[in-house]
Image (cartoon, rainbow, N blue to C red; front, side):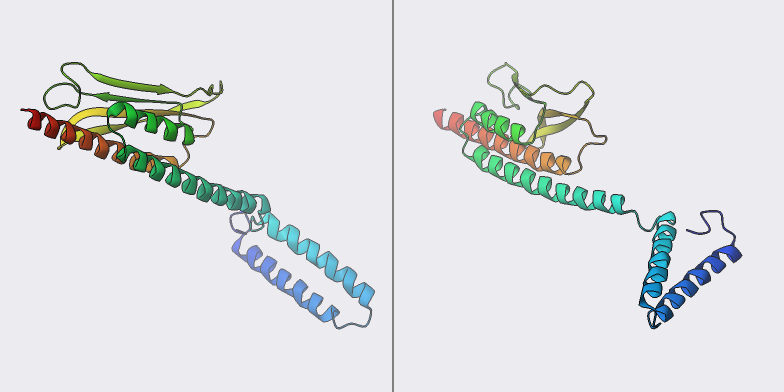
Length: 213
């Protein structure tokens, strides 16, 4: 740090030895008879040391507090998102059709404070759509995004028996850049649950159609 501040190697060594000398003097003054004088000198040395250390960048209290509160916020969001996704996954399992699954998805989308979401599925014999009609489900948050916000988006492919059958797309309005790091893993887990249950519904429909035939 001393070298980064522009001191030469010699001056940096002198500064370190000077600091050590001051601390040694302070320790000797503790043993002196004049307690008032000792306290004054020690206080002055202490203030000097604090200023010196702060100039080196080793005592960035505000940065430490920001990091501490940031870590706490990250843990809180991670726990909240995980609980929301797990509850949604259980709701998906109880869905009897896509509309019911989508209603459960809208609930978790609100919990994750998403701005919008859409699910599009490819029609046809290998798709999940009914007949030749495309399946397009959309959701929009009632909360209005701030004017200075950044719209972040992510798209997740939907597979059924390793065949691409659609896409789940979500957006989120944020004033932070980049997006909160706790959100993408939660969305990955959520999209996997959506994908698994779409396949479950598709398989159930195929089985039902096979029984009818």
